[in-house]
Image 1 (cartoon, rainbow, N blue to C red):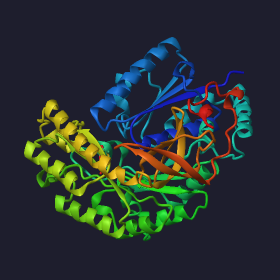
Image 2: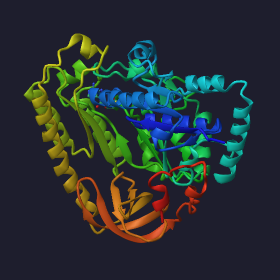
Image 3: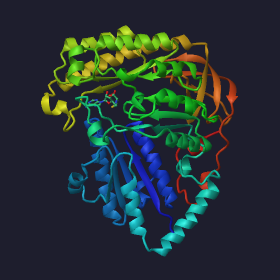
Image 4: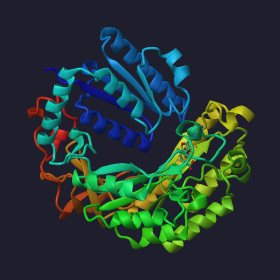
Length: 477
Ligand code: SAH
């Protein structure tokens, strides 16, 4: 009997990664098996991003490729998911891409599940097939009936993203996300904790709590329960080794959240606080709701309360009307504050946003690129210097994966570390002595293993339903 296979292509933010994981595990509960090869899939899903034109262009390119696949295999089911679909773009997209069978808003696999159930209705063959695969899934995976991780990811996914705030109700003038992900709503803490418990039962050791404005978690609850309380509750789950959260908004980072980050050993001292621009006029035009001095005060407060920290930020260069002088403000602010990693983007006009409707995208691409490069060089300089402080030091690393013959993991400050060892160390918490630093990674030697690796994974190639395992799966250990 032929096993139906699914393939999910994902682009964009961590939220999309989490949505794809949820979707994959639900498809497996329906009896589908994952394949990495879209050509042999019966179901292909594209999980899309439109935060910048470039991401949207890639999704459109992938849609053309899937159109060709469907021409060769008319039985192929095609699903389109994520911010391209948003809450109301489906009718327009259906006209543009008529070969797409199902459209799913971000974080909502519902329409696809309904479609698949309907198309399987009354087909006894399918019922038998689903039962058979279900029982196979259960035998071969960890003894857990919950499909929280797609089977191929069980016992080899060290870090998992968990959405805690869905949507966004801010109206930053450049940003399309509120139009596509709907209004802000916090997930009930019980749901989140349940998901985390299932994830760690299947091997996950680091939890990344996600929200467009993660520090607004719980502001829509009646009770007084926010991100600080949630962090403490997640930390109580014994198998969780590390917790991070992103992305914060400067206006909502409370002392309490910073204190919990300092006091709770499992919460990593890692802050993501997008400033977007370092000029007050541009910040007003972006409708960010703070000034450069407010941001300076925030950084000062984070550093005072939680002195051991890493602070990353997001910057957009070339926002409409941004002059050379205004850009210089952004450059100077990063230099002055010595922030850590900068997620850097050139402004990209997005449909329906206030900036697209009311402002002219008048900074030339050459200027945007030159501004981007200047910030890039500055951040290189800062990180080169900052990372040197770890040279010859021992740092704690949570090992995530194997990369070009080395183990790859992260420090509490989210620095990437590579080191060699023949042992299986996936998921282990180890100490590494740093012997080499660069702006974006460090290398060192293994000193000791503090928490042992995840149990050796089974050889998934032996399981017929998994045609091709994930690339990294078999290289481990
Ligand atoms: N909610 C967070 C970040 C979410 S969007 C915040 O705004 O603080 C992720 C990043 O994409 C943003 O921080 C911003 O830097 C970038 N971004 C969003 N819209 C953009 C646009 N139109 N052009 C370029 N970059 C954009």
